[in-house]
Length: 308
Image 1 (cartoon, helix red, strand yellow):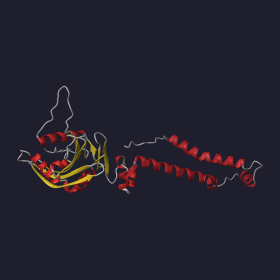
Image 2: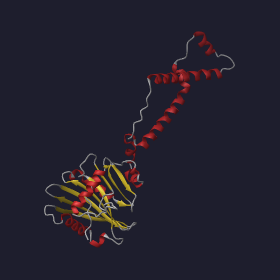
Image 3: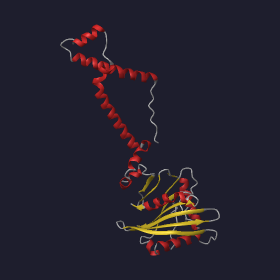
Image 4: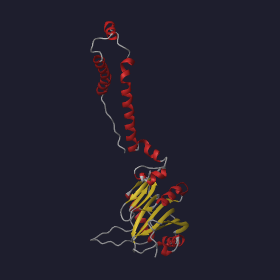
């Protein structure tokens, strides 16, 4: 039985508009209001009669310096300033303004990822895809990548070409292609050659990847499936490994391989696992020419793939 291969493929600005007249009125109110308060405070504190200082001011017509007028309000202004700064900081954190939240979470990336905060905020350049249907799965991907329908359907048709088959459909009851990726991410504006996608395929409930052998045996069988009867397509298994989640009783097979033809050269990292009558396949692919620069990101994507 061949293992199916999946070749997958604002913040709105808040502009506060003030007319010149509104700004002027605001400044006038800001200046006049403290002076009125000062006058009221002085009047209430001297109900028994004008003080010598007040009598001197009235007789000479000389007002105290501005520093003396605003001194009683300094503590109030300072308190309001600190409150405003604190409030704006909370807003900045919640909105990830200028990447502040991502920067702070990046100071403790493992703790932040364990709390799944990278679903909302990128951490060290990676966001998290958390898919809730079926068994559910998650993985991280470069934060500047986006989900795209073009990538999704292009990857599905590419898979069909590789496997040389088609999914039967009924005119009266059309069904979704079971080899169609449920999620796909790639750089914005790209052709789809660089992407990561996940396919969920139905299999017998007792299906087990281990029944086909270890990672190397499965990888070699996969290469044979890719090349098939096409002599102009060459596949090479680079490396294979496995990891196990003892809590969920799930084993993951990771395969790295190359696929070449006269028209393309691609490098892939794929992760397979099966549980509950579902076969999950994550495939991250890149043009061979980009692989040296992107391979560390691809490994991180593959290593992060888990069922939830």
